[in-house]
Length: 517
Image (cartoon, rainbow, N blue to C red; front, side, top):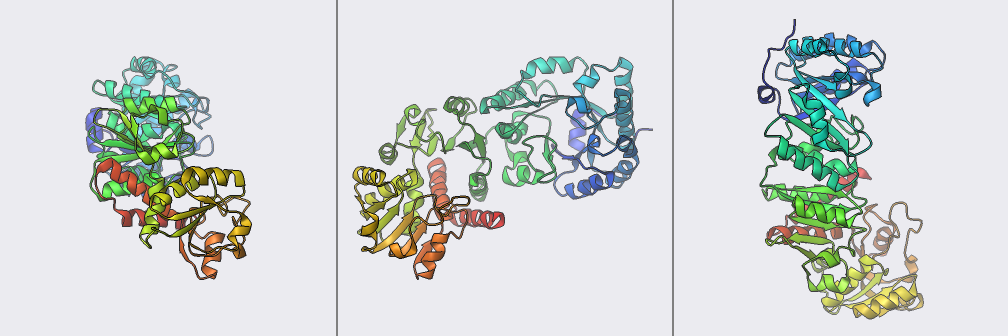
């Protein structure tokens, strides 16, 4: 006898734990239920991936323990899934065995049954009616683990079975793939209960914005390493970092665009700032190397602003309606703001990231500053410091690049021999030397430079060899994460017109860096 009264899909969602479903997989039922118990801290809506249980007979044996768990947690809404291996799951049994397992799960108290479309198409009409007779709602799902698909074509394929919910999951290979799925969800959600998600790194946008687009619910993992699909985010990340249950059509959307962005701390930093200032905004990682892809999404979503990283900083410039003077001089844009006219306007906040930490400690007018390196970060440092009337010298292993930067930036190029005879107020390391994985720990030997303050733009690791050497010589130091935070603070100000909560941004970034090292 089923524990489920027959209820409508809408009533199911209202009464059973919300719209964030935590997917649970484990090799044993004991471990799965332990994860379920822990997951209740984040959601009362759980999916039991019975096909992840080791052994042919274990999914069927799980019904009893699940029944006890659900009896002890009456407020929990549960989905039962036993996807067969041929269709992206782990179950090696027959269709008849899958249907039996789902029936037992319904009798155990699972309020929703997930049946993959391939199995539904092989079922007899009586088989589907038997599942419905359990009192559980029926979800029919489609998954493509390789490519993006036309959601409407899939919906037509699934909808003929008249399920309570239609779940469509594809694999995004661009931001536009995710956008297409979100747009379709918005169009279809007023007429049916749909769940639509794009997998992979390019699909993160669809996972965060799915509820906002009208998806009936969405899925999350219980924790890192327990994902049931590529690109699946943890429940804690979706709830605490992206606050997906609070997003609505008025939410302003921002993001960091480029590749790589998966491990960027910008979403943590900017989402923290938005929450601290009570702004209805969200900031996403937007993995793309295609400028066309990015511009399409920026205009169609639309995006209110962007942080632009490699490889798009230079190539985006011709597509901007206007840029500020510093961005024009640098020839690189790392920040975009969408104007009220819908056009894109460019800025470069890397300069602020370098200048602001220094100005908090000293006056830059007349200060003697040595910049190590001749790449993009060094260029921002030279141009920004010269604008503040500092006396800037540039050194690089590539002397020709140093001379070129100095000539264009109003600085002076110096040789290695000249460094030993000079003393500086500030030395800035704008090279990757000392970065985790870089073979060169120091840009210069300790005996080759003299400076009262050393600013290392490298922040992984936090304590670089250069900073350690500087402290040993009695120099004041600035860690690289300050540059990262202050450039982000300037982005926040450009987007919102409000002062950035710098202290809170510094705190969360430093905590994350310490935790990860």
